[in-house]
Length: 143
Image (cartoon, rainbow, N blue to C red; front, top):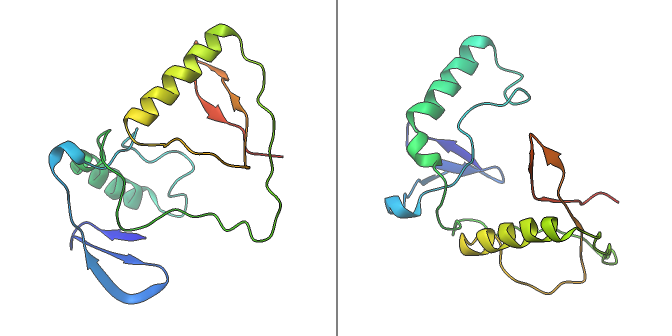
């Protein structure tokens, strides 16, 4: 999806020449993003001036990227696994403290409707790597 904030439109990669109007929901249902900045590995093909323009645009429109919001109705995320058999990796053992961290993060993501409860033959273990004296919630997907 390509977003043009100047024209308030977006287009889809597979539908060339067709532009759709950006429709913004109420302020209490805004799009979520945890950080409003270009990371070091983003925009590497841009020169310094172009990176500054993008960074300024992100900061100027930061209200569009505040935490919270509803799921988009424009696209449903699907992963085509073809005819491959499901991969099921058993969970790793966690200490009671880490189990509490995982439970709290899951509850928070369920409440924010980032995730939903589901049953699946595809499973990946949860890990809590130590980062800056606090634990982060990560799903380990490599195999």
